[in-house]
Image (tube, rainbow, N blue to C red; front, side, top):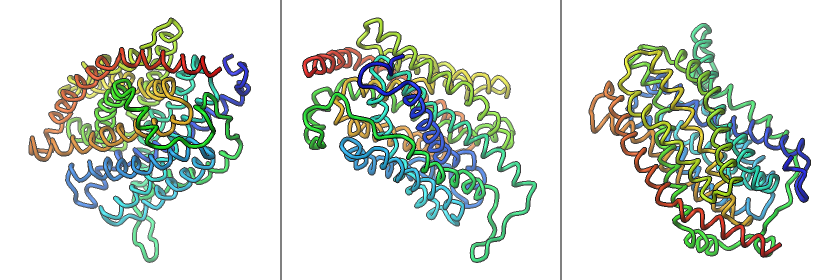
Length: 444
């Protein structure tokens, strides 16, 4: 096993850390994405448009997620990463639970901002911890397992949300003094927020790992040096950031509006959409992630310095045809089958993207480089993706029943740009891998 190598922890402990961070990451995506399934009910209660809902699910979270991500990354590169995750997990779980008390678009918008602030702690801290726990030839696999929190969390958000909506219809609403009635979507927020508060205790069962591959002293590197290093390898970093951002815009935007799609075109109830997509994502999402990690590790072991870029590029090549055809499929069963195939490839880049940045970046810059990546994927993917679908529907096509055309237009933009970005940066990334390997060899 890789963890038997000198300087790395025992395999059982290393994989325990992966599993615990996976569970936490899963809850982060449940808290982040459950809003999508609850969309029809929230949209009806608040009387908002598709564009407003896109802003609520996208930019309300993404802007503050990225802004505070930069600060959290600075701390993660020199401070206690475990403590950072504990604080963030408690905050975003509290804000999710408190979303059950939202009475207007603006109040829910503010609470979703709080979720973004809390979740900003996880990505830089968790990725940096795992990079110090696994050697490079096993890092993609470890990070892909950790990144299963994305599809598993998304799946559980739909399954739990669907079950709660269905269950709430059979029970009377709860009358809270001074607040009023708490309906189905409010109870869903409460149910997924409270368990996260308890998870903070489990973080104290792992230790802060020793840092490896540090560039000089153990203190934080000035931001100007990080930016200078980023610019020196701008093409390599940019290709990953832009390519994966295109993938995220299509994937996250589609997932957020998926309940609307099946409600409007296939006459399905939101609860049925949630359970069906949740079960599909629970299978195809992790499979896609493991496939991406396996492909990157295999190519890297074979000596391909551009292994991670090739593995990333497999995603848009795989989901291109499904993305262009799904909006126009009339048979419901066929639509779900095509969506399952697409979801496999949509999820494949997540772990590989993090690993690709780790292997070309010195230890003390990893958190901050990851934060730049997260900023890009969050603003473009998690922010602009849902907003674009709502905007296309309301202002370009002018009819909510033309949401399918918005799906097609988003794919028409993101797929070729994503593939082009990976092709543009492939050679530069390979050179960056060689440079970092040389630096580590010279530093001993």
